[in-house]
Amino acid sequence: MKQFHRPLLLCALLLAAGCANRPAVVPPSTPPPYATLSPEQAEDIAIHALGLVGVPYRYGGNTPEGGFDCSGLIGYVYRARMGAAPPRTVAQLAGFGQPTTIGELRAGDLVLFGGGRPTHAGIYVGGGRFVHAPSTGGDVRMDRLDGPYWSRQRVEVRRL
Image 1 (cartoon, rainbow, N blue to C red):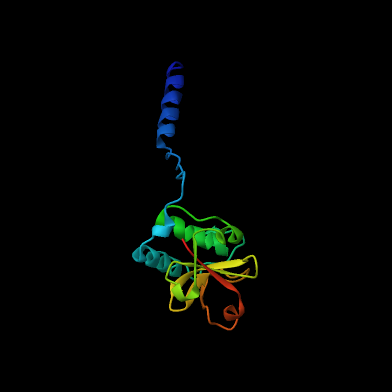
Image 2: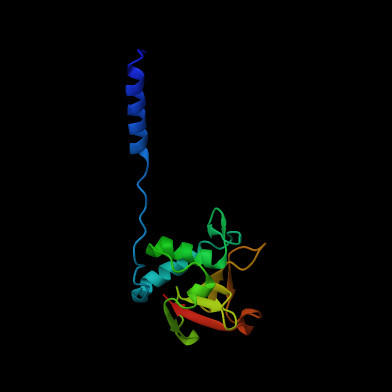
């Protein structure tokens, strides 16, 4: 190859490599209007959460490949189904969306557990059950709100 062709070839390769990169994903400036989720969308969220049962727990985790903590699971499901995630921490989730009562629970609602400040959260899937990432060494699982442990916990419900 002639000496003067090398810089031209290098420029062409760099240009081609630059064109091959995917464009950056720009997050929306405001989250979607969760308060207007239809019952069908809320059901879709619940079904997606059920599909993640069995994924390992990992503190700080937010993907099926890397594992989930409770708020990471919620963020992943809402991002996948609605295009944007609610706040990342359980404490932040406690002030997000609209409060509702246990009697008004529907699939896709968030259930938050703990005293004055919630420390754990899950996604309600119907029939008195919710999906959550419980603790280190465990897996994402489905539990009952009226089960021996969870029925003794203070519960708060948020509809996003």
